[in-house]
Amino acid sequence: MKSIASASDAETQRAGAAIGRAAGPGSFIALYGGLGAGKSVFARGVARGLGILAPVQSPTFTLLNVYGEGRLPFYHFDAYRLDSEDELEALGYEDCFFGPGVVVIEWAQRVMGLLPGDRLDVAIREGEDENRRIIRLTPRGEQAERLLKEARL
Image (tube, rainbow, N blue to C red; front, side, top):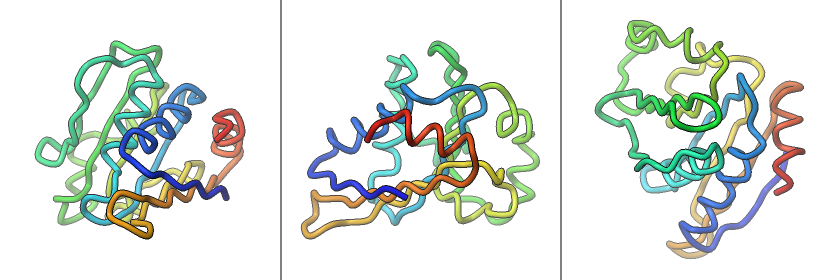
């Protein structure tokens, strides 16, 4: 596990970009945190690290945004509005979760039963003031261990 402090959205995005640069095919990043914690900012950083320049928005209403213009496909999920894991299954999530791209899922705790065992858990919480964040990265599995090590955070 690694904890880092962020004093701004830009720093949170830079942390995500480091993960994106280190990500390989099949990398899975599960994001946890309350409303406004910085999950979407971190996800945007992952996209930038993958070389995606398009605007990256939280897929709160679409549940999934797919970006294909980076060095790897990027699947950005948001489970906030899901009432059950069945709704994610209806999207055909397996093709994304277990494919050659990079997956980031916000509100991962809502679909814990569907998450792969090898993943990087990223918990973001507010720090001492409204702009500061504490980002805790916990690798679960060998690929996630390599990802965190190669990100050099």
